[in-house]
Figure (cartoon, rainbow over the protein chains, first blue to last red):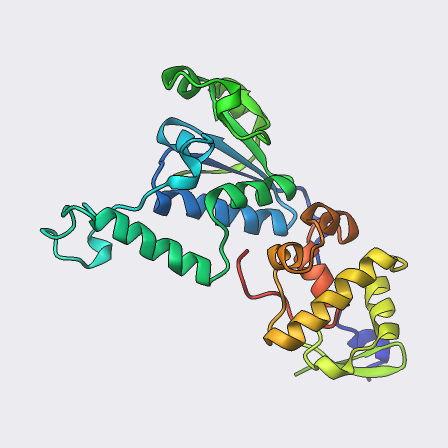
Amino acid sequence: MTTAESTSIIPDFGDDDPERKIAFVCSKGSLDMAYPALVMASGALEQGVEAHIFFTFWGMDMINKKTMGNLHFSPVGNPATHMPAALAPLPGMQAMATKQMMKKLEELEIPDVPSFLEHLSDMGCHLWACKMSVDMFNLEEDDMVDYLDGILNVTDFIEIIDGAQTMLI
Amino acid sequence: MPVTTIGDREIHVDDDGFLTEFDEWDEDLAKSLATNIGLGDLTDEHWKVITFLRADAKEQGETPTLRRVSTIGGIPTKSLFQLFPKKPARKMSYVAGLQKPKGCI
């Protein structure tokens, strides 16, 4: 016999589950390589997972105030665009492909990279700049977004993400 | 679809317990739903979120995402994490009697 008590269906939000941690290393500065980490970090944070993003090499373009709003997508060397290989390097093709991708993202209400990073920061995402890359590109703290958690060398980053699932992009 | 009893009412839910019928929800039910998931008493701030979610879902035909609640609903993301700790998108949808948001952002 079933009682009202035993038939209650209440979602399990896992409030008592062990804490999870996820980390992304963003090493690319092209538009199509920027979004995967941003989207996945956002999903992780929505699920109560502690998230960290470490920006290094060309990934620095994602947090550099001068470049972050102007990332590009190039069809060159990317067979997934299904564009004849000879057409991809033509002048204007990169700008067109970038515009097209931005338009599609906008239609889906996906924010641009600067707004997305701010949104992640509001959600509690930890954003770190790589010390070596900061030195390599001669960047100052003022060159990068204000809501950065800090500049870290890799040893400190590895220490901070102890136990995290980690992805290199 | 499963039927569950909340308070003294029978409510249609999905397998996870999220309401499937928009019109089976009312404010009293929201209070029970909040209690079910340990949110305690709903404050004015909670109600502001719930009211926006219901209105937007009715208009758009789907549950708004966290980002939409902040950009269109004008409720800062940080507050959503305070009001509905850890998993705000799912918890606020549950209390508002809506399905989980389908959008990623």
